[in-house]
Length: 556
Image 1 (cartoon, one colour):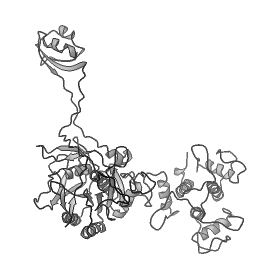
Image 2 (cartoon, rainbow, N blue to C red):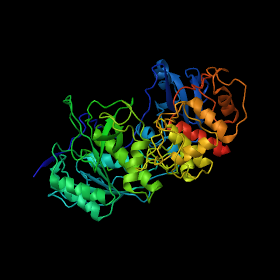
Image 3 (cartoon, helix red, strand yellow):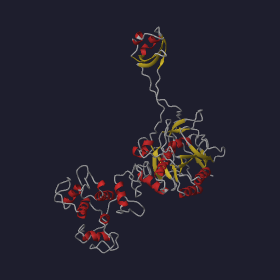
Image 4 (cartoon, rainbow, N blue to C red):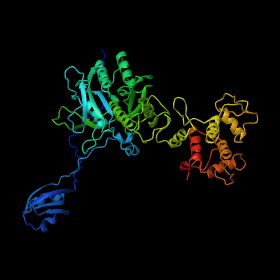
């Protein structure tokens, strides 16, 4: 039977804060003091040795004052002074915002008011301190041999729980999903060790109790058939599984992948970044890494056996800390889109992540820094970021059946649009039937998907093709030609008013490009250019089309 080694953060700051105090040191030059005096004392003499008297409390014969430090002994010897002591600083007891929280939950996300309410999350870990005043544990179970209690006797599980679900009150800290239902599954002992069988038992318990998400801030260097099968079973039931990529003190050989169970395809493997948005030096990397989240010096709830209180807090570091940020984020997606399939939620997580490192998915950052939902609207296509500049326009075109995307539900907004795709979209806006047919172009076969739109557009004078009787349907279309097609399709009036520095009167698309600006479809680039010979992306073309169809999208 394989043994799990819980890889605690190797940078462990056991700083326990039942009650925080951040008072600054008193100045060496001046001191704030409270001075006890005889009732009815004339303050004239006292004032000679103070910088300022702030309050006189006649009911108790006490004066609050700022004094030069050098005068302290003189004041104490004055005949009517009975005692003197420092005036301590005070402050409100408030939550400490974890630095990682605003990295994942933007102000735009926060405005949605999502808290994870109604989402059930299982934490397979060392247990959770259910008596902690900043946590609300819905239930749990223990699979370690020496106890039936899921109480934490290590601290790791309680720290993970707080990152997800610390309550939104006036103490401690706040989790990313404070209203989520947390279930503690104790699979590790007081030393942070356990068996894969105990973790598998925890996964099965989670399946049977119909949780929505499983958090596994646990790693193992080896996988197993049983573990893989149990995880696949959970995923097939619609449960999202999130696990830590792993921590290392040594440089990893080239080609190393993240640890188990995060390496399995059914699991979302999570790496760590630091406060500067850079890869944490301890975080495992590899092709199976899916996303990253904050993992350095994370402040959260804790259990400390050396204290006699239940309201402990601590800083900890590791991919174990990054993992619950992702779990909490998924809880917000689950609350926002409760009927959405888990696979689609996972896709949204990937799409909406902030790309870091090399463009696209890479072994160091995966898809990037995880982000909470920023919109109540569900993107019509899976690879549209909710807050991307083009998403609303593309969603509008999907709703109006102008575009459909690819069979796998993607749109590839940054790819170049082809001449055939451009004519197809414009043809749909003009209600062309699109039935496949012969065309006048030698390179457009009757069976080609866009042949009907191309034939109709040619017949109506919208497109003309090239001199050799070709249309080149699979070539990218340039921005100048887009302007010309828009002018012909939508009847723009020719414009001689020069709009862009790089579009000259001798260019065949000069009037059309100017007309495109007059129609509030495009303002070109910030430097005053239009780049007419540059191919246009699918997102850019779709936005142009949406602006033509709906005045709400047009430029002001």
